[in-house]
Figure 1 (tube, helix red, strand yellow):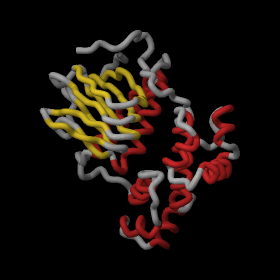
Figure 2 (cartoon, rainbow, N blue to C red; figure 1 turned 45 degrees about the vertical axis):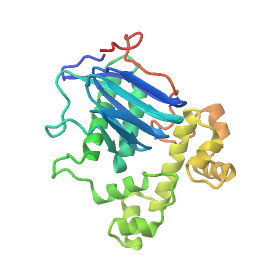
Figure 3 (cartoon, rainbow, N blue to C red; figure 1 turned 30 degrees about the horizontal axis):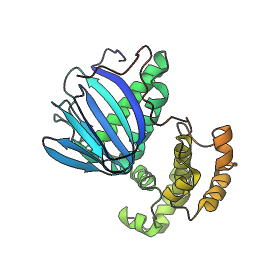
Length: 286
């Protein structure tokens, strides 16, 4: 594990795509985080079976036994953090299951950086990993509703995060404006002043950057098109080419397109757990 003067050790991260049904039952001597990307997972906590769907996360602390599984194929992130003292949010343990909601993009970005840097040597990688871990915990804290009252999002950042959530599901500008308490015209003008794009252009760009993530992780183009709400693979290919100047097939053959964004096309492999430098084999189970 990465040693530091703080009490947090970063253990490993993985992104799994596995068939079902599957059932795991063991003890993990750390904080085990499971973020569902596809499918539906369950975990047993204090005798109760909890369920999580895409965008949901399990925060499983030290228990006599960790137990989780799924009934059909799933894709999910797994990350482990060890603390010398119990990890608390505003004086209480994190909830065992929560919906990340508007904070999903931030948590996913933190996991992506974590996975890309964890196996790299040197202080720069170590600092990036630790920053990603803290950002992930900040996202969990915000999703749990335990941030201090003085800490709040800028209104336009809130709109941006809404636009980056639920990619692939239809979103009408009028509905978004109503949810934000704004008129559609004011929403468009204010968002464009802040971010340089219209709200729906921002959402389209976020959707295509998400497509790069999925393709880099091995998902088929047709599956990505369907998952992200395109009418067919041809419409997806046209949109991808307009955004990045190349087709998804070219990306698969030659690497990330320009403008795909940091962390969007690292090619992080599915079903491979990443460990810190110098750590061999699986970590020590309790």
